Image (cartoon, rainbow over all chains, first blue to last red; front, side, top):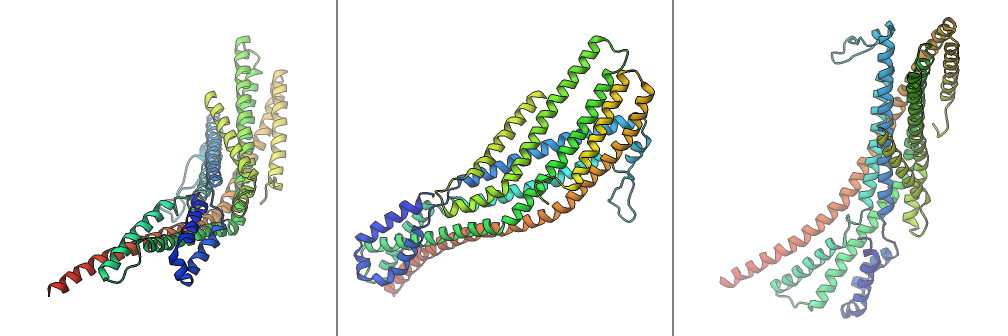
Length: 330
Length: 119
C-alpha cells in the first residue's frame, strides 16, 4: 500500500530497537536492515497521476473516434448525394473489383473518400488503443496492490507460524517466539522492500526509455486530429454551401427561407462545437509527452507539482463536457 | 512529424480556402439569379473539390503508413511492461510457495518423528 513505505518501515525500525536478537547477532541482520533502510528513503508510488494519465488517454481515444465517426458519416452522405445527382465516376467508384491473385481482396478504381476515412478511423483507434493499454500497464506497475502490505503481513504470519512448528518438529532448541517473530517480520519486510524498489525502478526505467516513443505517438495523434479537422471542415463547407444554394433559389417562400436559414445556423453551431472538440484533442496530444515525462519526474521527486498531468486531465474533462453538449444537440 | 502543420497540410488548407471562395461566389451569383455563370463556377469548383478529396485521402493513407510503425513499437513496449508486472507477481508467488513448503516440511518432519518413535 502507499503508506507502507513509511509506516511499515517505522514499525520495523521500532521492532529492531526492542530486539535483543539483533544485539546478539548484529552482523546476521545487517544486510537486511541496510536493505530496509535503503528503501526507507524511497517515497511510495502515488497511483493518482497514473490513473489521471490513463483516464485522459481513454477520453482522447473516445473523442477522436467520435469525431472520425462524424466525418465518415458525412463523407458517405455527400458521396451518395453526388452519385445520385448523376456523377457517373462516383457510381463507378462504388463498384468493387477483385485484385488479381487475391481471393479475399477488394479494390475500387477510384476509392471513395468515406472508405479512406473508415480505414483512417480504424488506424487512429488502434494507435490510441495501444496508448491506452500502455497507460494501463504503467498504472498496474505503479499500483500499490502489486506489492500490497496485506500480502506481506500474511506472509510474515505464515512464516512465523511455520518456523515455530519447524523448530519444534526438528527438536532443536528453539529461539523465543519473539525472536522468531522478528525474523519473520524482518525477512518478509526486506523482501517487500526489495520488490517495492524493483517496482519503482522498473517504472522509472519504462518511463525514461519510452519517452521518445510517446513523443512520436503524440505527434502522430496530433497529426491525425489535424487531418480529421481538415476533413470535417471539408464536409461542413459542402453541407453549408448546399443549404446556402437552397436558400438562393428564387421561388422559395419566406417560411422556407427561414427554415433553410435555421438549418444553416444549426449546422454552424454544431460545426463550431465539433471543431472545438478537435482543438481540445490536439491540445491533449500536445500535452501528452510532457505529462508522460512528469510521471517520471513525480516518481523521483514526489513533492513536485504535476501541472501537465492536471492540464491533460482538464482537457479530458473539456472533451467530456463537449461530447455531452453535442449529444444533447442530437 | 511535429505538432505544427506540415507543408502538405498548408497546401490543402489553401486549396480549401480557394474552394470556399468559389462556393461563396457561386451563391452570390445564384442570389443575383445569374444561373449560367453560377453553373460555370460550380463546375470549376467541383473539379477542385475532387482534388481536395484525393489529397485528404492521400494524407490519411500516409498517416496510416507512419502509424503502423508506431503501433508496432508501442505493442512491443507493452509486452515488456506486462513482463515486468508479471515478474513482480511471480516473485511474490514464489515467496508464498516457499512459506507453504516450509509448512509442509514441518508436517513431514512431525510425521517422520512419530514413525521413528514407533519403530
